[in-house]
Length: 514
Image (cartoon, rainbow, N blue to C red):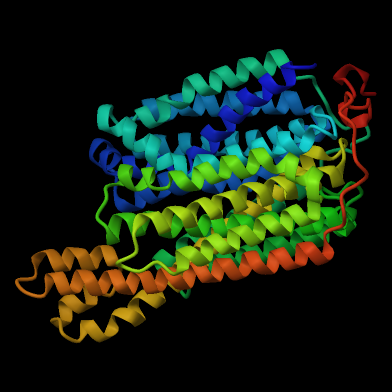
């Protein structure tokens, strides 16, 4: 394939950025959607959550299906679904229609993400794979902080459907390029698809993510949250029992006995926890503490993206110099250092320090997740590339959702505890509102005849106390993952050549499948 592999990778990364970007790009458009479609707060929550739920729930089945029926065929189908869903979202004229379209879009994204990683794994040579996977994983991570920037730019000039129309040319270009440039690959020895396992796993994941999303809003002790989490536990237990008895289990248990897969996946989940933590807290810091609008807050995340690109693209060189396990551990250590810098931010801290912390964290994310993903995909080989990518992507998505819930609770508790002494100086009603969040505190401060400036400063200090707890907690997670990677992650396999990929089962042309 020669240079066409790299052209294919470039276009595929554009598609991956778009899929990842759609997780965050919609947030800025919610007020306009609410006005245009007369959407309630609950409607808006479902418009956001529908994508995340379908995305998390369908990834595992998508990768396994790709291994069985053909990865190119499955990826092209996912891109087509994403394209159609984007058009449907842009043309929606009711909240119910938009929720359905967002669900379909999440389904398409769930197919595109793991299959793209799997195809990169089996298409590139052993010598090229670290660089290719580094670029791919950086593209996925890049889309998350890019969402607010793209959304802000579009909404300054166009109506809310523009955040969906932007997907159409990108998805169409990716679809055409993948159709023209990709070879078909599959596992010719794959058993029949375990349909019952697919249903049980998807239902368990959706119930878990739904409960985690709803917990902070409705309360962790609310009947809805408890029922969702309990259902997830029951479904997961049913899935595990079924997998032990199934003739052709959805996931081969031996996958987790490979230390490269297990500890590589743990490293990527730790990175996702830290990245989701940064993206949960830092936009609030820029907007609620310093008063920037969403677009300018997004622009101030650019050092994180620059670090991601630098770390991801340099991974192959670093791996050749110091090896995979040291690269993963070093990347996680750099990530932890960046988080510690962000954990020391105070009201008087200048943006230069914040930018340095973001750049460090981004470089650590890019290097560690790229090297870890490379060892994960090397462990599953060509035959089970889709399965390995989907299991890893699902665990990262679920880990990120759990992290946001846990870190959000830590941020709220730290903020309320630090603000409590100042609340005693306010009327009871204002104190109750201000204790909810820094955004509410700023609203209270705006109408206070006296003491507004003091409340803004106290709320900003309290928020930074909570932010410090979150960043240090993420740093501890990254540091522990660095240690475990150094101890348990096996050394890389023998040095690989840059020759063409061998004709193993994972790259067998579709027509040769019996």
